[in-house]
Amino acid sequence: MEIIDGAGHILGRLASEVANKLLREKEKRITIVNAERVLISGSKVAIFKEYKRRKDQGSKEQGPYFPKMPDRILKRTIRGMLPYKRERGRDAFSRLHVYLGIPDEYAGGESTRVESADAERLSVAKYVTLGEVSEKLGWVPK
Image 1: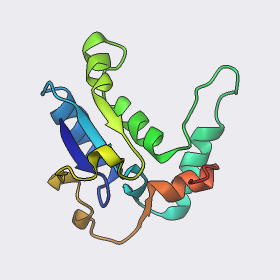
Image 2 (image 1 turned 135 degrees about the horizontal axis):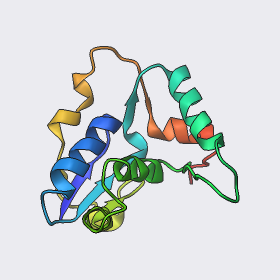
Image 3 (image 1 turned 90 degrees about the horizontal axis):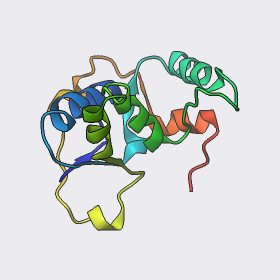
Image 4 (image 1 turned 90 degrees about the vertical axis):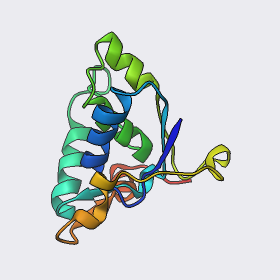
């Protein structure tokens, strides 16, 4: 099992690395902690507008459903990069666990960083955390 600390990682790059390199190629479980501290690069206004549009599309009865919670948004992003309608994609997705904060069982464990998804690669300081986006969508942190 591999534990990845999501704090300070870029959402798309982290999701791509986890989906393509770690889940598909290796047969081990991946756990991502601190999902609310994952970063989305770009303008705050544009990011909030896009996520609000995604949440509002469809209907309550028929979907498509777009999550509000940061851990579920991250998991949905990774799912979009997997062939989740096929058996190998479902198998890979079932080995992924995403958490808000750090649960007690992983508190003492050694977490790794995904160097290709590190936020220090950003040339400009335009970003917003997944927690902020979720709060704009109506999520209330506990």
